[in-house]
Amino acid sequence: MMGDFIYRAFCWDDLPVLVEMLNRAAEVDHEESRYTVEMLRHQFEMPDFSPENNVLVVTTPEGQMVGSGLIRLMFGMGRGWGSCVVAPEYRQQGIGTRLIRLGDARILELCDGAVEANTPIHVRRAFMEPNPGCEALFESEGYRLIRYFYKMRISLDVPLEPPAFPEGITLRPFDRERDSMAVYEAEMDAFSEHWGFLRMPYESWEHTLMVPDRFDPTLWLIAWDGDEVAGMSLNRRWGDDQPELAWVDVLCVGRPWRKRGLGAALLNQSFYLFQQRGYTLAGLNVDADNTTNAVSLYERVGMHVHSRQAFYRKVLRGREEDIQD
Image 1 (cartoon, helix red, strand yellow):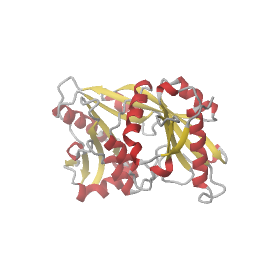
Image 2 (image 1 turned 90 degrees about the vertical axis):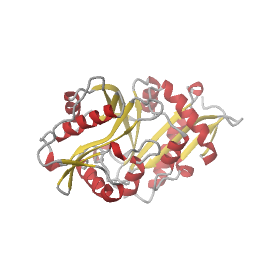
Image 3 (image 1 turned 90 degrees about the horizontal axis):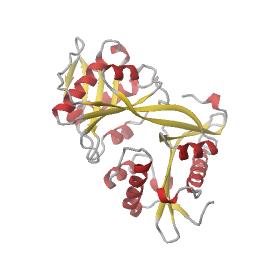
């Protein structure tokens, strides 16, 4: 049953109502993130993203918002990302199915003429487990499970001490004007061999990390070896909905500095810093099949798996075996 609903393009006047609906849906979908109007506005102002062209809202004939879908092409042609949310009280009425189909069609439209004929076009979607309704919907629309990501946590209830760092490595306060480009290049290089990596333009990287009310450069730890960035832990507060939680947005070590304990030192220094600032919990996201065995490192420093996110993919054109992850 598809229902008598209206599917239309997003307009900026929708923003407060969309935030309220997303947060209500998150309560029942095991999603920890909660939006504010400022946060979602910042996300929609991402360089090279047009919410008026890439976000749909669904309303009743009376104008009540009951769903929303978003798509975007990633930073390499042929790969898309899609998400859709339906208000809890309006589920099982075909809204999610139509949003997925409209989103997939939009990705094909955006790629038409812009992607070489022999390049596969595919789209990824994800949900936090457990969500049997979303799982059934994805599979009914031809999506296939391809990956898991973990959210890991640690309690900071035991007094901590700052760790020792490998010889020759120093921490210096992050200066946005002086250090941003070096940190960006180091992060891109460190993650270049990871699953799903696409080099993000600098402007998008800066926009993604420097979110209003969450960006705090005094929580960023940049490890230097002379004038080279050896590694980093780019940290932030989670948000007002969980004020006790600090978050490690990015943790990486450059290839020349691996296997020396720098990753563990950066994590433990982050935990120490969080505790000094009054946080009692810390967390991060990690690919469950990370090529550098990051999950084992996080478990060694005392973290545990808190929740799991399932990633699905559908090939819209071409062959799955030709996709380069």
